[in-house]
Image (cartoon, rainbow, N blue to C red):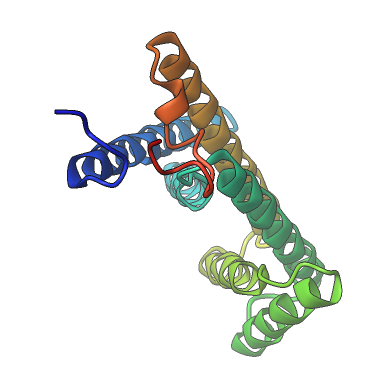
Length: 192
């Protein structure tokens, strides 16, 4: 019996493949970020935070098709850059304060819309919240937090995209590349 794209078995197979891609990409990003931070003589906790942030960025980026993943990667980096600039400008001069968090979250929602990136507001605001709260937990060198989270995000985005390229290549080698989630587009998901 042939499995068509609309059958439950095909959907489960696609879901399984997608979940494996996300899991592998998260492992790669966590490993890369924790290895990167362990080589910079940072405290263990900083490395773990970096690994977590990279894995979150990877999860955000890995989608079921290449186009969605590329769009998500651009959105993730765009939102992180907005947050990076706002948080660095604030933390270079002022310590964490709740009013500062509120101000920067508001600006993180405003700026993406003003620079033509509507849709990045929530991600920028979430990123800003994490950066500011972590800066509040570690007030010595708080201004470094935006730099560290920018690096973690770049590692996570890169790991997600690299994983998708590798999985796609493996699919081509095994003859299953045209059915891989990273190859699908919204118009070619039905079997013909």
